[in-house]
Length: 353
Image (tube, rainbow, N blue to C red; front, side, top):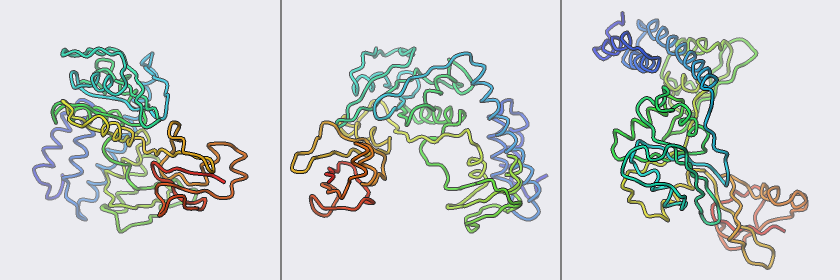
């Protein structure tokens, strides 16, 4: 029994004992860990809870892999353009309307539920770039457990580069987020800045111990639960046991996500900008010496791209022969000469000499 545990702990314990699904058990185990007392006398309890959570996560991961193999078929949309974004939501939340507005795709827009029975695809134009939008048939409560072909539909979300969730109420929004989470897809935040590398040498080394919100014993217990007995760990943010277990779960996938409440109030030009921004990419334009920029055919590149990386996207010989580059846009003055390690910004024009 937990020493000095409050009523929240025992309520979670009771729900855990009554839980029927692995998802429910994991939820209440995590609540038990959250509300368990944190002191010397409770270290054994915390270690036991941590071990159970680790083992349950491993079992769930195996079940997900087996489910993928046993479904018999999958729905897959081949990626096209400069990025793929999936549109998700409950029935009648504006998914088809949004796709038609942004891509002119020929889809049926109707006031009754489940209008879209198969994924619909369209190409959104954005300043010369093309973003592939995929409307996923309606998500429902239980999609993550296979209801209404949900496993295959959520697979489309996992395959996409980013997501849009349409909703009419906070309850709908949270339900979609929850179904995604149960499928191992995390939205609205980045992966914790925690690095765990298995090491050949015996023992566990920890960098950034000041960020730990647990005992080293509890951390070691979690690692052993995943079969890790030797590791090098780097903590770069406040680290709870929940975050450690999250990082250890290799099945998790983190997605940038735009939440749109129906009816939509964002103007179309701003909406296109927000959607393109989900891809973490920039548009860079080229010009020849003495010529004009080619604004019709931008290079779509990852944020953080350096000037020295650009020639490789144009021509191999150009990379070898590049002497310097000039930039119009993000530099202090137009046409400024920059080094190869200059980081390009969205909308920059580059001239290579």
